[in-house]
Length: 138
Ligand code: CMP
Image 1 (spheres, rainbow, N blue to C red):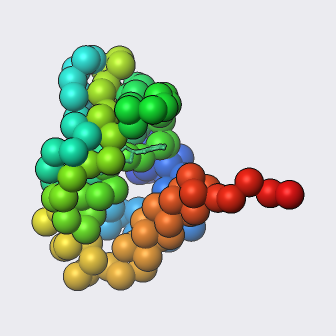
Image 2 (cartoon, rainbow, N blue to C red):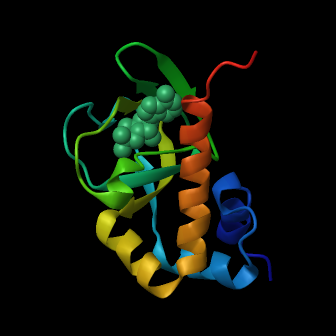
């Protein structure tokens, strides 16, 4: 029988290319969390140990010079995958949200148990970094 939670996770671009077995691994290792509107989830310059994948709702990233709205399928807080060092932006929920929240320790468990998922997550993060720092063409 179709599992609605698995279907929702399958729709997240970050997990594109994950096998059914990998999706089940993610589903059983990471909780969905409800987040109220107006909550600060990361604060620029401060530490924080959580990585977020948005399933429902919207968040706003404020780097100090630019603002950007993120929605379902987007992720943020990737500094926490490696350490709890200073965040690069402040992120707030602008509506009620449902999100996957992965702590640094949970990511370590994923890394230990399923290197393929780790590579997929790191590839998505690297692609975004590459886009953000791309030199203008021409
Ligand atoms: P982190 O530094 O852990 O916490 C703040 C997050 O904001 C950061 O991870 C990214 O996920 C996100 N972020 C920072 N700068 C940008 C940007 N220019 N575009 C989109 N997201 C960003």
